[in-house]
Structures are given as C-alpha cells and as structure tokens.
Image 1: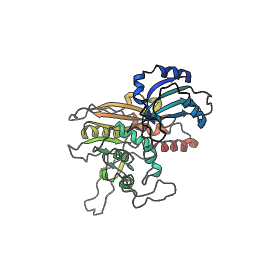
Image 2: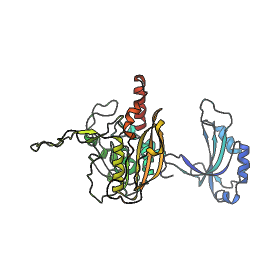
Image 3: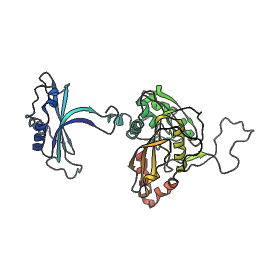
Image 4: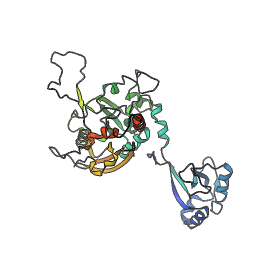
Length: 394
C-alpha cells in the first residue's frame, strides 16, 4: 500500500452481508481469538463509517456505530490517535441517479493501511512546471513505475522521454532517471507552450526543473536529443528498467532521422554551430521492434520493459503484441481511448541474453493505427476524438 495509487485502503475483513442483520451474523461467527488482540482493555480504538454512492448525515453514522454494540470492544474510544481503527463500509451501487434506501452490501473490518491516492493530486500535471501536449498523467505514470518494480538507486531510462512525466514518477521511488527524445525543442524546453494562456515556453521550462519542483533533482542523470532507432549506447550499459510511452502519430509525429534521398549528411565544408538532420516516417511496428531489441540488449537480467501499445479495438488479438525471445510477458492491460481504439499497457521482463542476428519478425499491423484511429470519424466529431485522446495523455 506504500506504492499503490489504485487502491484507496486495505482492510482485514471481519464480517459482511447484504443487510446489517446478515453482517451481525457474520461478525458473531468471526473467531474471537482473531479479534482479541485489538479489543483489549488497555487499547484505544475508533470506528469509521464509509458509504459509497451515498452521503449519510452525522446522526445516521452514529446510529450505525451504536448498532455494533454486540461486538466486545473493551478498550477506550480515541477519535484522534487510536491504536486501532475499525470501519463499517456500505455499498449503494454505482448509479447516482438510482440510489437505494438500503445498502446493497455491508462490510466490517480492521483498517490496515491507506494507498497513495494523494500522489495523484500532489504530482498533478495541472500544477507541473513543464508540460507538453502528451504529458502522461500522474496516476498512469505511477502505475507504470510500479509495473516496472522501480526502487531506490535503480537506473531508469525513457527513450521517448517527452516532458519527463515517467521519470518524475520513478524518481519519487528513489530511482536515478535519464532519457532521450528526437524533439530538440522538447528536450531543451523551447518553442510554443502547451498551456492555454501562454504562447512561448519560459527560460526554465525543462525536465530538470520538473524534478527540482518535486525535490528530486538529485536523481536526475540527464536527457539528450537522440533518435530511438539509432544505436548510441555502448555495449555493456544496462538499465534496471525501461519505461516509455512511444508516439502514436495522433498528437505527436513518429519520426526518425534519415532520408529517402542519397545524401543525408551535411556537406564537409559546413561549419554551422548545429545541424538539424532530415527526418522521415518511423513506423509503429519498427518503433516496437527497435524498443524490444534495445530492451533485450540494455536491461539487466530480470529488468523490466513497460510501454503502451496502441491498437484498433475491433481487430485486436493477443498475437498483435510484439514479442522477443529474451523477454517474457508479465502483464497486458487495456485502457480505452475511443469507441474503436485503445492502448495496452505491456510489461515484459528480461530472462536471457540476446543471441547474434535477427531474432523475430515484428507484427506489421500497427503501421495503420493512425488511419484506423480516424476511420469513421466525421469532420464534426474529429475534434472530440482528438480531445479525448489528449485528455488520456495529459
């Protein structure tokens, strides 16, 4: 629970039922020896009442607590700093327009721990110093870090780093973070701002500043402009985790350096301060093939690769997920993006070193994702569909 952003709280269940009468029967059957360590005379306690999809008045909550007098609590009530907290939970369903008078189900148990839902608010993209069009929301960033098993002193890499949302989540757990991106303006915090009331980015809008905002600058290794399709890392360099959200070609283009022309390098007599290379399309299938190959070579043994895979929902099957002989599948979860598209959160773990030569042929169907995403979307609904995927990203 010190890691989870999905779970609100954890409880040790003592009793449950469809009615309070059934709850009483269930609680009276619960072993006394399991209750006794928390109901001693020298202990302090409190009882909370939680309702889902309904709000109870204070007097109704007190009535619920008084009705539990059949439980043998011998300790002293302490509302501020109790040693033990017990909870009565009432479930009124999920339809806010049809709330029943009586709960559909009730539970009672001992509170164990709260989750880390507070991280979603404290790391919200809305309050972040440096953001982009596709900055990953805090909740999903922490989920990805948990899937990767990121821990203190790990070295984590994001090859499509963008504005560094994933690095921020990993740094919260004490990992050292680094990344690359082909977009010069994003890496250096230049160009147009993604904020509504701001035209251009400020002088200190960058990934390092984001980590500084959360007191994590000491974990920042570096980020640099680089093409994910090119091999730039020395042999033997290994990361504990690779976590990334590759571009899908919807809000951000999928590009790599290169050209269909014969000449791609600057002339020999060129003495400019910098050279912006020519770029060309970087197909999704190639992105994932390169990503898996990179992970196989640069993950430590047992290290994990976590990434998002966009799919056309009506055509999806498990065979579409890219595989690699050195990486085993750990999990495959779906997040819906629109009526006909979704993305899969893929978690893979390295279990053996790669062999020399090509290992597999990647699935090619992902290359048409952009066309399929916009298929069947009329001009009137086009902006709504684009806004929906933007909200999923940012």
